[in-house]
Length: 176
Image (spheres, rainbow, N blue to C red):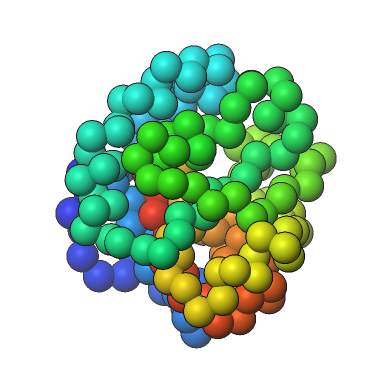
């Protein structure tokens, strides 16, 4: 479990561009063991591994109640190859998920980019307006599996806020 307090270097950098930070909470540090977990889970498609963190996630998210929990979507090609959305697999056993974002396919996956390339990634998300409208005025938690640079979460948050400006959004990731 992560115990660090205060703003990390990424937050200090993002703060220059975005006056309102994400206030992301990550449960675990992205270390060699976590990297191996994600390789087996996402790359090899071992869906059973989605059960590994159910108990600890349940305890953690009870302390962070929200009106809705919105997962980061996967693009269609990745979903077809893998057969599941990794974020939904991890968090869907713990909280009801409200899927209202779509993701366009990127020419190069985030995992294959370096830090500068990740940060330069164009907005990949599109809000499903019919599903987003009921979120007006609600507190949501945006969920992702790994926080690497924060680019994905900022894009998703921006997309949701354009669709529903009155949203209150915090973010949770399994690892950082």
